[in-house]
Image 1: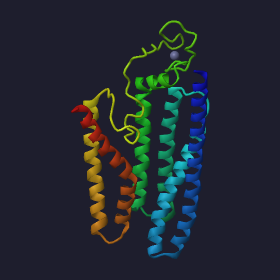
Image 2: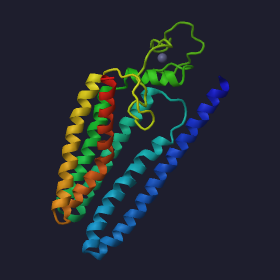
Image 3: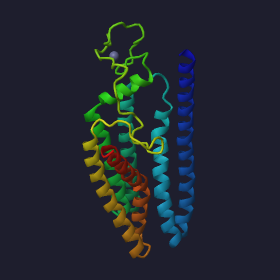
Image 4: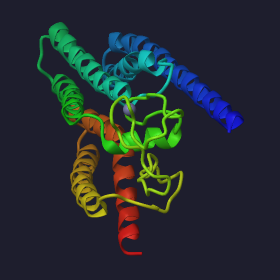
Length: 267
Ligand SMILES: [Zn+2]
């Protein structure tokens, strides 16, 4: 038991350090892309268009790295409420940073071009997600996940659960779940980890949400691809390319998970 715990802790620490390295690398690569694109912009012509595209991607990656680097360096015991606050702040910071980039672009060029709208739109989306997360608060499911991973502490508040004889936390009143309780896992949507879904809490709701999301994403990706294929390479084609690059993973993810939920419901 003790050896297992120590190993698990060590592994999660290694994972956190690796994550921090990845974000630092992103920030570094983003900085280099920015410098390169600056040089390209100075040349003008087609180089300027490519430079503009690269600088937008570089800036987003750079901002992403900066916004997440500090939070990923977090150490200590995992408490759901704290993790929730961190993810709210990550979304708000990222949203504000992207919108600031858009404002900077508008301020420097004096033109309300597509890039400025795009920065406003993306930044606004992150702000909305942060606000929605803040309103919703942590979910019961997250407490269960935390408890499953560390049954020595309360899943809700992190209080010591080892020396408590009742089935309720003396600190916050949360009821410890029974050992045989079926819980939707944290990794349920990670299809590359385990294709077959073992248990879903609200499969019908998941089906509806994934279908709607799939419809919207399919429409967005198809429109962007049509624009890219039918137009000369102009700023709209560039924006379409950025949109496709940004949502492609999400799009693939949604469609694959839709298939998995259908399999789960009809098997
Ligand atoms: Zn508690």
